[in-house]
Length: 192
Image (cartoon, rainbow, N blue to C red):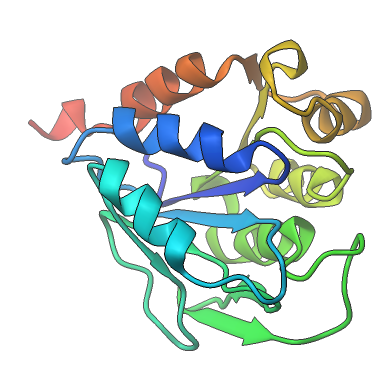
């Protein structure tokens, strides 16, 4: 299976998890990654700069109507829902909060599932609420691959535990094993 995008939902403990992930993913990792991290509405971009300092990949805030490109990591800006349109561009909205959050993981995941269907990987990492559970169900309904961090290894177990309780997730793994799996299933061995 050739996956075209990865969506990640993360909340409490997310900075630490993302630092680990982006320091371990190789420079040639080409599948675009789109992330909703629950952050303050008034957050600045300093934390993205800190992530970039540790990363082998280019990490940036997603912009309105921006085309999703290979090899990039996109993060939802503070106080905006991030959606993916059918033409694989971003749309930002200030619609009502979903699960008390804006950006909401469910909003990103549900729109990504519609845009990418079975060519999408959805991942839920550490977090303290149930945002992402509905979105992961939608990814699975559209044929995408679903991965949850093993709650026992998450800084905050509630978000992955909520997903695992609600559905049959394809993989439940510690963070380092999720990273290894992503490298294994997205690197184009067949095209070498």
